[in-house]
Every structure is written in C-alpha cells, then in structure tokens.
Length: 112
Image (cartoon, rainbow, N blue to C red; front, side, top):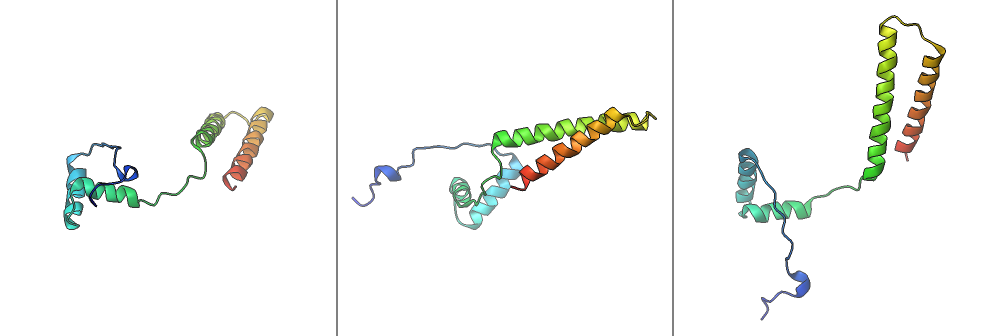
C-alpha cells in the first residue's frame, strides 16, 4: 500500500482563476512544451514562484499613497495659482516648506 498518501500529503485546497483566450493559449503551449497538463503546469509555476517580501505592509503602503496624493494636490493648487498670475504669498511659501518637510520625512521612511 505504498500509493496511499499520508494525511499531511493530501491535497485538499483548490484554486480557480480565469484567463482570456490568449492567456490560456500561451499557458497551454508552455504546458505542452513540458509535457504537462495546463493545471499541473500552472501549479508548478505557482509553487516555484520566487516572490519577495514587500518593503511595507499594505496599510503602510496606503498611508504613503495617501500622503503622496495630498502633496500632489497641494502642489497642483499652488502651481495653478502661480500660472494664473497670482503672486507668491507667505501662506504659499509656508505650504511649500511644509510639503518639503513632509517629503523629507516620507523619503526617510522609504529608506528604512
């Protein structure tokens, strides 16, 4: 009874995903090159993938994106006013300095 798998070897989880015709054809051709079924080939690709651990957690990434979006919005507002001929006011200069400091802090965080 050497063919009986141990409980830890049983494959009990299932993954399904959809492909368009072109993607499926590409996967199918690659699988046939190795003499495998499409599902077996996809499984081998998934198991051999070499993903790297992300630098930031998902919540940290969302916070960074939010901060960059805010800074971009502020910069666009200042640029729009300057392009309309408005003079550079002390409030605008203060906002630019605040943005520069926020960028420095963000850059320090990214370099960790």
